[in-house]
Image (tube, rainbow, N blue to C red; front, side, top):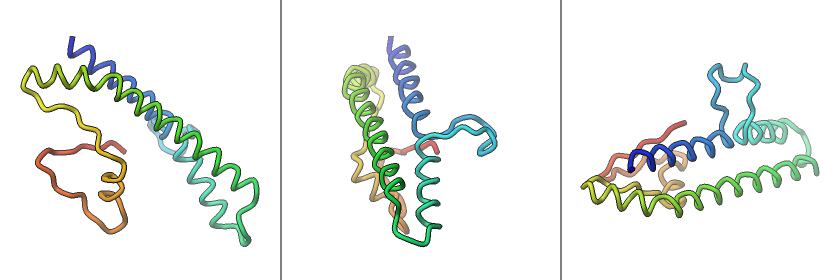
Length: 127
């Protein structure tokens, strides 16, 4: 039962991840673009343009921000629905629960020039 719940959570998390980053092997040559690549494109366009950002660039940035917010809300809904039951089952089996760190803590760990804070529990990150 717990195995099935964990497998379902992993599959759902991967579906959200696919919305954010290209996942096909081969890197840039696959032509697979996701939010990360779109943001990179807009950044490059704005950075290489000699004037103020164009209305189209601003609109694209706003649209990408909304898409990312949608993914964030999907993730929050997913974890709110599935983690309590999974964590209860993990705790029952004397295993550590799955913790979602607050975005502010993640930002602190990933800000320029800072090193991740050491915690008593290891953290893993993909991408």
